Length: 160
Picture 1: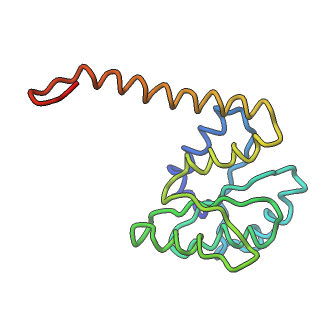
Picture 2: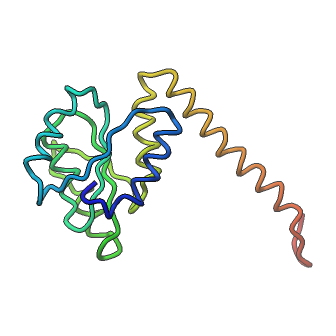
């Protein structure tokens, strides 16, 4: 994350990864304030066994792109709503130059970043794939249950 003020967004990602039993690191790194540490992290990521990186940043939101420029590991960017409703961060992350890509989720979408990272990991790990499939089945079951409960809601002109 660009700073610890991003932690509430990243907690959603961390909780999901934890539930999926996926080991992860959490770091506060700033492309502008700690560029040396960002470079060390990015260049050493693959060697440490990291298979996907989630990078969150607001405002200029350079962190995901800078990391992507320094590692072959896939990077998922989370734009943080800190100014301009997060649109500035969204555009900074999604508008990468050709050859340096960052997969980008919605503004403050920590959970979706973790789900996408899990999907990437599930391609080569059957246990992760099974846990992800169970999670998705649970999402489906919640909607089916909610739809059944809506049948009990009554209005004078509601057609059942």
